[in-house]
Image: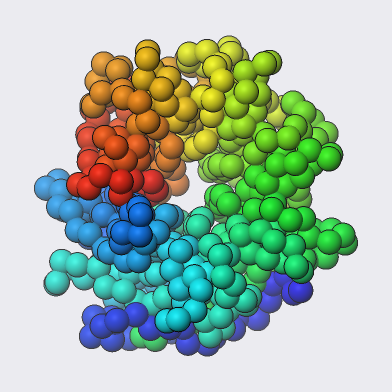
Length: 487
């Protein structure tokens, strides 16, 4: 299987409904990029907007609700889709010069339970939208699946294409590539007759009226660069994704490591127009990584790259929610390390923390699932590393959930002063997190998809530094508002 192509491949993708009437033809890609806003500023008012995934339940339609900042007077608009629509969300820029600035900030939605064609079993699709300031609504620009024109791969039933998403993020006035690279996880993809081995698909989308795919590639364990043996079954490569600069980190939480089933690993890879290092696999069996690869750890369930300034190595957070702490089953842990952009190797000391570690809030308990989600947020001149523990019990409320930072002993539940809502059984606060400094977001987003019988809710902000916290809530029981979040 080919790993990547260096020559751009330009072939038309599936066009979304009513696109031609909204998008103007943009100039050639050689023009100077002129995006004045970041990838997540859909209404182009200079402030990042918020996208909340609401994948539905029991066969009901999914949705993504977008809260537009609207120059300080927030408004909400909703995009609906098939069941599972909104399982993953991210933002993307496909802008090369003077033209339609709506392409600076596009909404990308994963719908892993949707069929690419009528009458075919569901393998998953990804939809791309732009925001029209004239109609005050999102317009579907294109839909992609593994067999779209120009793409590599096979549309397989149950592959869950779109279960995880990540993309290069443009900051306002930045010099990022005009067409940002998108990564799509298919964690249940069958590879060489190995079920649920997993695969990621990566490509760029240009600014043409009929969107075209550029420089596509796939990566899976059927590729010789990841090993010469048969691809592992149920490894779930692509279950989580994170991108920063020229690095992508891919979670493989079902990987068997040193004979331990579902111990988990991550793949660190470099992308761009130059040949860099080959993908590197990292696990708790790797030299210098604390801990032991054990069955059920699920190392790589969540991953997050924290950008660093001045050419320094970015920090990688890896969540291991199935980690046992002593005899406490599934208490969870997070591994913190720096990754070289040029070699993919770790730099400095690698550390792993759990809730019994110094500088952590609370105490390790069975089924806390610390590390189910990881992210970061900038406040003042500092960056806080955020960790979700959705299985945390608060008093007698089982699985009410908790979010904490690493290193300063701060943690929050819905029983904490300044945090809206009430800690209740099954809320699962911290099951999803977002708020990377690279996007310009100054407030983290905290998903509470189990709030009020899975109606779901999202916190905008945490009282990290005395800041205010807003509370957004879903409208229907069982729809899991906040299952995914994106700034």
